[in-house]
Image (cartoon, rainbow, N blue to C red; front, side, top):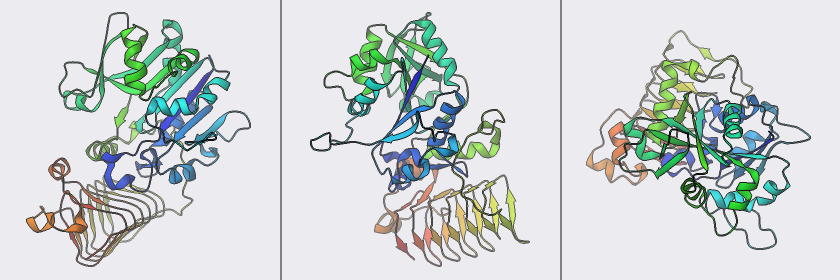
Length: 402
C-alpha cells in the first residue's frame, strides 16, 4: 500500500488566543523544545510515510521557517519528502481555503497526480504518538473506502469533539459533531484514511467541510470503518487543554520520549543551561540556553529563557528568549517568545478587580480562563518594573505596560 499524507495546517486557532496571533496553530511550541506539527511529522516518518503535503494558510511564516526542507525529519528527499501548499490563484483571484474539504479540493492536482492508492488526512494540531501502519492495515483488510481513528474520551471532553458510535463489525453508524451532551464514548481524532479514488470522487461539487460534506454522507452509506486507538493522544486546541497537556508532561515525561519513537524537531543550537548557586528547580523542564538564578517549580522553560535572582516561576510555561528580572513572581502563566518582565512584577497570582476589567491593555478576562486562572502574555511584550497582571488576563503581543 502506497500512502500520500496530507496534513491540514491552515486553522487560525482562535481558542489559543495570543499564542496564535503571530503563528499557525500547528507551529505553537510544546513541551520545552517541540512545535505541535513535529508530532504528526515524526509519526509519519516512523510509519514509513515520506510523501507529505502540508496545507498551510493562516500565518504560515513560522511554520515554513520551522520545516524548511524537512531535514530534521529526514524528509529532504529528491522524491517525495515534505512540501508546503498554500492557496494559489490558478489564473484567477486567490481564494482562501474555506474549509477542510475545500483545502483538499484546491490541491486536487496533487491527489490526481499521486501514484498512491491511499490518502491519509491528518489534523496537524494534535500531540500524540501513533503508528499509522496499524491503521493502514485495518483499512486495507476492511475493504471500507474510509477509516477514521477514534479514541475513548472523558464525559467533560465530549463537547469538544465529533463523537462516534459503531456497530459490532466496526462500521461507524453515527457521528455527532461537538454535541452539548452525549452518551457516546469515542471521539473522532481528525485522522482519516481514504481510498484515493473515493476521495477524488467525493471532492466533486461544492464541498467545503470534510466532516459534514464528505464524512457524514459516507457514514450514512455505511462506508466508514473505525480504527480504535488506545495510545497517547492530547488535544491542544484551547488554552485549558494546551496547559493541561503541557503540565501532564511534568508528571510523566515518558509520554513523548520513547527510545524507539523519538519526536524529531529543529534544534536551537544553544549552549547548555546555566544554574547559579541561588537557583532552585523542581519538577520542571528546562531547555538548552537558559540561565536560572531564581526558583522554577512545576514549569516548562523553552530555550534561552533567563530567570533572574529572587524570581519565582510556578506552574507556568515560558517560551524562548523571554527574560524575567529580579524579584518577579510568575504563577500559572503562559509567556510567549521574547517577552521582558521587569523586576518585582507580579503575573498571575492576584484575582482580577473591577479596575482590571476596565484596563484596555489587559484584554478580556473570559470566564473559562479566569476560572482556570491561566494568564497569557503575548509575544514581544514589555512589562516594566512593578507591573501587575491578574490571574486569567490576556496581554496582547507588542504591549508596553507598567
